[in-house]
Length: 120
Image (cartoon, rainbow, N blue to C red; front, top):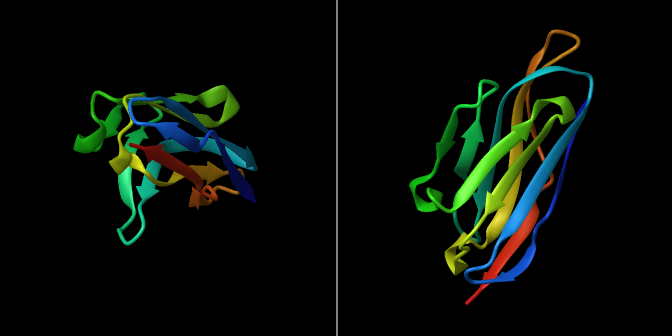
C-alpha cells in the first residue's frame, strides 16, 4: 500500500505565500508524474501543476508565474510554492502521484487534501 500525506495549507492574506508538501510512503518502486489539483466549493477539481520524473512541468494558466512545482525523488515528495496568492486561489489542494509499486502494479494515488484560504 501507498499513502500520501500533505502539509502546509492554511490562511494567508492576498499577496502572501504558502508552500505545500506531499510525501509518499509505502511499497514504491518509482514515481512518474506528481501533481497538485484543487477544488473550490461548487467547482470541479482542476489541475494546478504537474511535474514528470524528468522534471518537465505543466501549469494551469491561472497560476503561471506565481506557483512553482518541484520534487525530491529521494524523498518521494512533491512541493508547491505559491506566491502572490489571490482570493480565487482559495480551495482544497490535493496531491496526486502516478507510480509503480514493488508488485509491478501501476497505480494512481491521492492525498487527503489541505485547505488553502486566501483573504482579501
